[in-house]
Length: 371
Image (cartoon, rainbow, N blue to C red; front, side, top):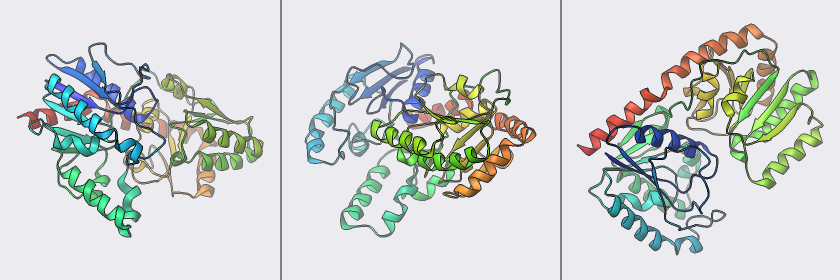
């Protein structure tokens, strides 16, 4: 089997890139399977995650301006070159199946080229973000949504991460395949440290500004716990968060740690994981925290956390209810028995998402499409 994954780049830390490395490495290790990854703007950078040496990379050197919309005229004029180079490379590779990973320009034209090859589009974000815009769309948005719905219907399969998301798709070609675990360590956290951890892309959608407000209230009543935030993002946004921490005078108990390629080790040295995102789809980082035996406190945002966390493995807080988040987190920090009990059940829940179980679903889907 010859598989092609299409993505914009793999040099920036992110959930899509991380999951791709897991899937691609898995298939590269299988007999009689050849894996290719096509990028549009790798810019000769090294991948930020480890990829099997048997995987073949090809960068098309389109280099869209990532600070502008893909539909901006300066980016649109690169589209003919993008389509032409994609078709040329695919004809050389002759894949059995094509998977479009990131939500970039490829999404909109891949279903219409080399039609004999089965094509899959995977979604790593929640379409909840379109809900209000679809209710009262502008003329442009109304046309755009009709276009995207049409494009999605032309894929052989749309892979979504949880069952709740299926309500947002007009076509009937969706399949639910959750993200696989990146690791399931032999040891778990001892849950004895006074450290809360979170990790992810440093961006507005992750709600770290709310987390700082929450932690300010926690820090007012206790100085014995620390909060460490792992991840990287736009320098100006990171600076805004650091300024917010400094203004609140809580820099001794909360730290922006930057990105790390040793998140497992960091989780194993922590006792609680927190998430304050505005929306999620199926956050892999929550499964990783559970695999390390950590209980989780998270906003019940649409729609990922509720598909991973329940009252036995953590605490779901109504979105944007900072006061309840403070109270629930503080109560959990005061109760080591509850931390341990939830941590044990969290570890058990994560076991369901180990690599072989999830990748068998991908393999079956590929086999069915190729037939």
